[in-house]
Length: 542
Image 1 (cartoon, rainbow, N blue to C red):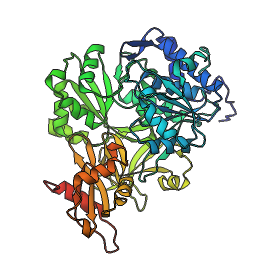
Image 2: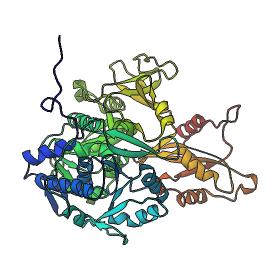
Image 3: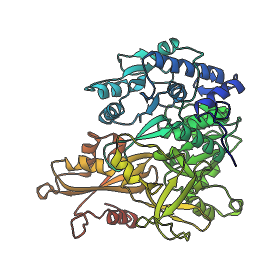
């Protein structure tokens, strides 16, 4: 065929999730888009506020490609940032509110953030992080009526900032859909965070894929139990808006509040780390509220054990298992429903749901490859290989980190570093982590970062950190420590934990410590697989 047909503005528009809000503002103008305490924000108002934010950022000198950081919990302003920042052709950098000042300082410096959108509660954290920065960002502070308040900080009030913006500012996609839309920092396998750069096209597609996989609709009411700073809320910051659903904001997860919001607002969907499922299951009876409908819950991380699935179903929840990484916009695989699932026993259902599943429809391909040869492993559910992905919902790469990029982009695939098997029906199941990462409550913890702190202890001779299964958090860091001979009997588990908590974000500190010699290879390398085996096989780790 003689295909000399031109690409024009009529038949090609760059994909960007900013278009979702523009459409929702027209189609569902008067529908409540956001619920936050006593606040109600319609889609028309959310559209206007996002336009104002984009315009105000431009007026503040933010240029195309500049980074705008956000240190905020799940509040309406964080949703506005997910549209207003990219509409200004800038790059949103959501920062984990649980990080320590040194790590926040590193992110602000490495990203070159020009503006920091800050919730007042975290003013002290921001002040400490900004100290010593050669080029600190301009700070715009949100005073949330639902928040606890916080310290004074030299900043522009968010509402004043918005007031100077144009309510008719165009929400236009970038000229190139490959342009960066967000920059998220992940600890990876080293103590220094890596900046994951994702683009407009991928964000658009992954939001569509999640809306399909999670069955979102205009009737959906989505409760924000998942942090919006984590992989852009797994792209549900955009996916819920795409479908015209209602966002119900929640500053921090509290079981009583979760049950109350589900009952009061008819919540239909939420996403959560396994630790949140356990919080709901073990909530006291007086904190629970009955609701007449079923709520779909998407969870990642370790597969939910059968008692958790049974308990959640008993409370009125339907659990959906997902798999993904920050590098692939959050979820990229889902344990897709099959007709036979309805007839399975609880044990059979739990075994099926232990699988991470199949690629979302917007991911081109997911498979398991032999780590040495790069060849596909047999689909026998037994042969181990590395889970690999390819498609438009894989990151652009790590910011200013060519070595890390070369390690994960191999022969046209993104290598996740996770080991798994491929079942005969095409479902993938994770079996072990090639990276020494502890995933605790949905947060990545670098074992090397924790080990570095342990080695700085004056009485520690050797240290290794591995993940220990935990019924509440999914996994927690377990430190194996060899003390210097003169220190044996003089250093306690509590002392080691306190040492780490003084130097790390608290969630990164070891929850348990075992003292004694460490297993090593003939060349002196610590055998972490042996330490993991001890934790799996021992009834006690003391």
